[in-house]
Length: 222
Image (cartoon, rainbow, N blue to C red; front, side, top):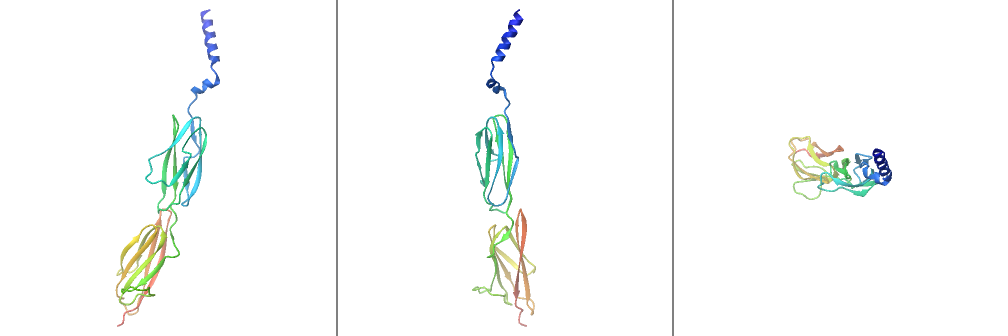
């Protein structure tokens, strides 16, 4: 008889527990529909979706030195769409950042990557030729030599080389946005004159571009 009474009491207590009370025993869930996002070099927006039955927040991992993106929202409660905006890439390199989407009992990793722009040369890139005395640009280098300036705006890390061993260089600027190379040309070794070729190379992590420049040097008087 006592056993029957005890079982009836347990059954009544069990039935008294509502469905809402059972939610206390539900497992914390967190799902993210993507683990990576890849962006083009120009400004772009992409989104991902979070599915969860609780609160969540987004944490940079590690903390970035320079922000090239925004995330909205970066915290919430329950399911949500999250928008990631990256700004135009002003570097010759790919950029990336890792995030952790964290709930009370779980976390998911998301990595965003933005590619570097393709190397380009602006239309105002020029090959300007100056004699030792300076002044206005000239169309050729005189037989006794001169200074060649190759300058312009570009996208990419700039390097330059010449196909002649007697040409030396001074680099005033070869940064990401502007190149300014000065080549010192000695006296022409021949009476016939010569053609001097330069190759400007621009490089980013998305590719490489080369641009030739050709300059004539007068022959020396015998």
